[in-house]
Image 1 (tube, rainbow, N blue to C red):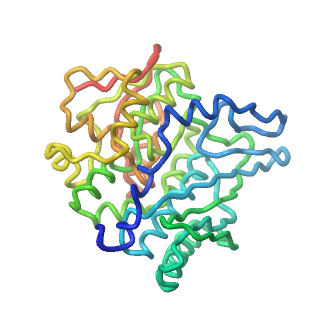
Image 2 (spheres, rainbow, N blue to C red; image 1 turned 60 degrees about the horizontal axis):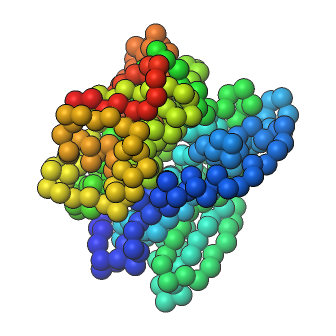
Length: 337
């Protein structure tokens, strides 16, 4: 796998979830929109979450999401797999299962058709693995390539996971290591980063479902601290994280110590830093916690008495899980050494 200015990634200004609009500006924009009023709209803009959820009846609700971004790697098939994984994971973060997907694509006309076809094929492979169907889409001309999916999934109306339900006494877990932005920027262990960015959160969600978590979100472009800030603020709690327990991709901390940062780092600090206390935390761990993730893991809170059983189930299934903190009364996020 390659990433650099000589290939597909070189056609973009900033790739992956680091290309997301700054969270602070997005909050300002959404604040001006009047949220739709409908009894069956279970999750919409007030507050927003990883996807919208609309109830069909007492047993079924639809989960809607759309996610796309510029390339962050040169390999077109890999780019398609990463972009598809990132979009599909929004449905898993809501407790749902994907049903059908549509491509959202923009490519320069001079880009070879074989390159575009490889992006589509990579995406279709991940959609199939997720148990869904890629049923079409829309492609336009654009100087900067972009690709992603609009996805519809299903969930039971009583089984919707939101990021606003964290409660004091909860344990906090993460289902993937951090550092994709740092590793890609440093051109470190790219194969390891690619493996995680193409890992669907379906197995983690299936293992989590019987435990009825209080809050779930996926960690993507706003970084761990940005998404933790959202969860804490919307839940009316304080989230306390242990910097030494944050799992890191191989090469991520080394890249941070060498001064490597992505464009998402300053935007994420602008959004979250005023709500985060991090006295005494080494800068490389702060950089890891603010690093914009692409197709990251699930950030989960659930009652602490369920923590040991959850960890045992993940270990038995061979699925990654790290316990990184706790929820308490208060506000904001504390990252302690």
